[in-house]
Amino acid sequence: MNASIIRLGIRRLVRQSPAIRRLAVALCGVGLLATGPLATAPASAKEYLVTGVKPNGLVVIDPAARKVDKIHRIPGGGVAPGTIVPSPDGKIAYVITNHLDSVSGIDLDSGKEVFRANFSSGTERVKAMFGMDISPDGKELFVFQAPVRLLPGEYKVEDTRIAVFRTADGVGAKAVRTFPAPRRVAVLAFSKDGGTLWALGWDLYAMDPKTGAIRDTHKLLNWTRDNFGPPDILDVWPQFEQAAVFSTPYFTSRTDLPPTDPSAFKTGMLTLDLASGTVATKEFEDTSAVIFSSVVNPAKRGEAFSVYTQLSKIDAAGGALVKRVDLPHTYYSINIAGDGKEVYVGGTACDIGVYHPDSLDRIGQIEIPGCPDQGVASLRMVKR
Image (cartoon, rainbow, N blue to C red; front, top):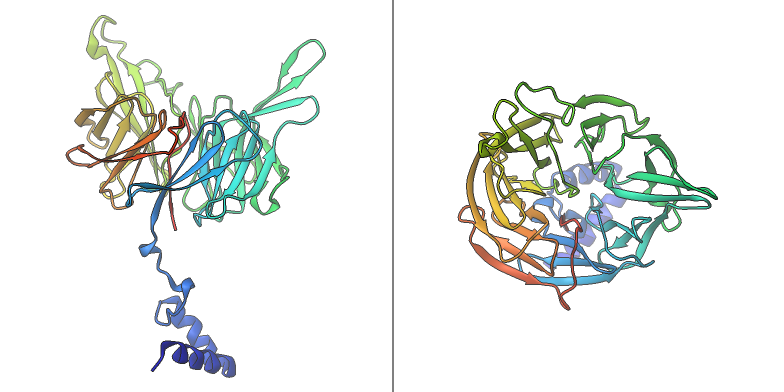
């Protein structure tokens, strides 16, 4: 019998009987009446990489096909896209743009701008200094802002803050609330349950996303570890979606060793589990090659990869460098496939390098047409 006739018969039964309608809803919930597009299982979703290119491009990449799928133009000018945050459903990418003065939400299928928030007005000039994330339900966008008041004879630096926007407000959105935030916040990351907004600055802060109250502080720059000086972190890349673990390299020094001793300087990996809230720090080598961003393997959560002029594989849990290979040029950003079988390096230039997670062999490369510079744009993964 034709499948469309079967579906038509089921729909008629559902309409005619409330009891059958309740049963049909229950069966659809477990996938037993999967007959249309809405029945597509999340496990079968395809992965796409999203990055930005100068001056105002948003690039959608099919890593499996090793090709660029789409390039969209971000309206409103600017010299380079910055932080990129995908919506939870993978349909929209929110991008800091316009010289750090705006956030633009771009529909990844059509390229249409469906959200826009411009920060500055009147005598207040506001910049978004990298930190941005979206609530797990996709309803609110949180942006770390640094405002300055333009006075006749001076620039008056105002207190830093986090501004919250409703994504449903679309183009012309205004902040629905703001709350104070510590200075120098470079990364925002929501907990999996949406109950905590994590902010990475000189320390790591757990904040109430409704009120902005700081519930807990994990000391970093202000730690008091015996025989260790204060650590340094240079990371503005929020690439934690695959393992739900934010990670970043940090750098510190042993105060019980002379500064002429190379082993006095240490590189470690900080990890924040966005499900449990567990924070861990572990040194893994004498400071050498790792500088910027890193990503945790979702298939082996104790394993991390970091990138700069070399690609490094790190036993973050055990505190050891596993393997390292040279790269053809500098890369700033990094991400990983959902099954952990491919590592992607991007940023800086106009290509995405594809690497095997075990051997660190280069197994592919994706060139962005016209060779535009990615700069410090995030390299995010969406599943559609």
